[in-house]
Structure formats: structure tokens, C-alpha cells
Length: 142
Length: 154
Image 1 (cartoon, each protein chain N blue to C red):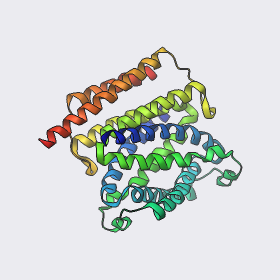
Image 2: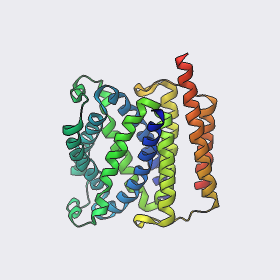
Image 3: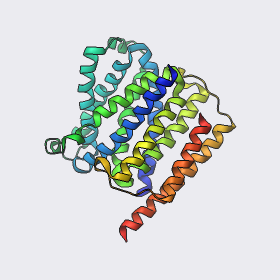
Image 4: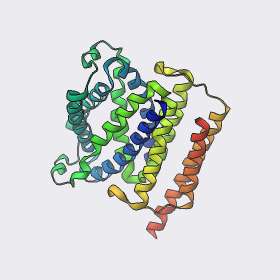
């Protein structure tokens, strides 16, 4: 079961790069904030449909959840807008490298301290080696 | 300008990891589709306000652009659904490193072929070695995570 989660995450990453490249183009025509808005508006419609037909969770949890857990949307806006602005200037590759370094730093910190409700998981030798390999890969790409 | 852009996207990366942690937490209680829906709805509201004040593009041009440029929204939806499903199972670091590898591989391909009118950056031997290191990283994160969960179990 566990490896399915890895495959999903890998596919999510490929979706992210394609998305960045395509929205970089769209942003040139309709504007950067407008591109983000398009994504979130139409995404809401798609998910509204998905939810009506397949949703079996508990949306009403929104009213009981701690308020900070509702901030995902705002964080996504910052991410997407920064991508749309940057891609036409420096290319998809370098944009992704910058995003990635941000992601790496943040996820290590989050998981080590168990911030934002994630399961606390101490850094071990393998994780450090993984990060070192990623940094080497990034330097080579750059 | 370039450096500023890179710094800006770095912050974008920080928020992306924070988002996956926050959404993973919410998703455990509310469900994957529900969490993604909430993320998109609140994002829409937030951007509507931003556009009212700062928007200087032309939203109506959306009717004239080639349709493939509009298809990225499905990718955005898939990305969030997958992330929210993966984080509670394998944790923030493993999810993000795996996402990153997917991103990099496709990013390198897009650059090499100049797909979607992006800047062309050719795939050279350095980038091949980089791909190798990514596979090594994936291997270590998988092992590291397995060890953590084994220690938790005992």
C-alpha cells in the first residue's frame, strides 16, 4: 500500500511542472493573478462535481476544525502566483529548482518539529543522505 | 530581476510544503476530496479580492486563448488530490521529495524540448547525472521512512 502513495506523489510532481509551464503561457495573455484565479475558480467547479458524486468524507468538519487548518487555499495562491510570474523570466527548470529548495527546507523543519499537525519524525541518517543527494542533483541541473 | 524572481519562487516553495502539511492534517478528519474542495474555494475567494484591487490583466481573454492552455486546471486538481492522499500515509518529507523528483524530471524534459513555448535549456551530461542523484535520493527517503515507522512500531 505504501508504495502507491509514492507513485501518487511522483505523479503530483509531474502535474506540477506541466502546470507551471502551461500557466506561464496563459499568464502572458490574461495576466498573472487572473491565471491563478482561473485555476482556482474552475478547480472549485471540478471538485464541487467530484465531491457531489464521490465525496464520502465530512465537509462540515470545516466549522469545528482549528482555524489554521483552513489556510491551505491561501498558501496555494502564494505558490501558484509566484510560479506564473517567474517562469517567463527564468524558465521552468530554474523556477522549479527555487521552489524545490524552498520545499525541502520547509518539509524537513515541519516534520522534525511536528509542526502544522504533521507526525513528528526525527531526522535520521537516510533522510540526511536523501537531502544531500537532492542538493547535488539541484546543483547539477542549475 | 532574475534573483528577485528566484527568491520569490523560493517563498512559493516554502508555502507549498506548509500547504501539504496543513492540508494533510485537515484531510485526515475531513476526507481527501473535501479538503481539496475547501482549498480551491478559499483560494478562489482570496484571489477574487486580490484581482479586484490589483488585477491589471484581461480575464475575458480566456475565451480567446488556445484551449490547451486552459487544460492545466485538471493538473492542479490532480496535484492537490494526490498530495492530500499521500501526506497522511508517508509524511511531509517523503511526499515532498517524491513530488520534487517528478517535478524535476518533467521540468528538465520541458526545458529540453521547449514545450509550451518555454525557454529552451538542453539536456546535457550534467543533467543526466542529476537524474541519477534524484533516484538515489528517492531510495534513501524510502529507506529512512521505513526505518522511522519500524522504530515507532517497536
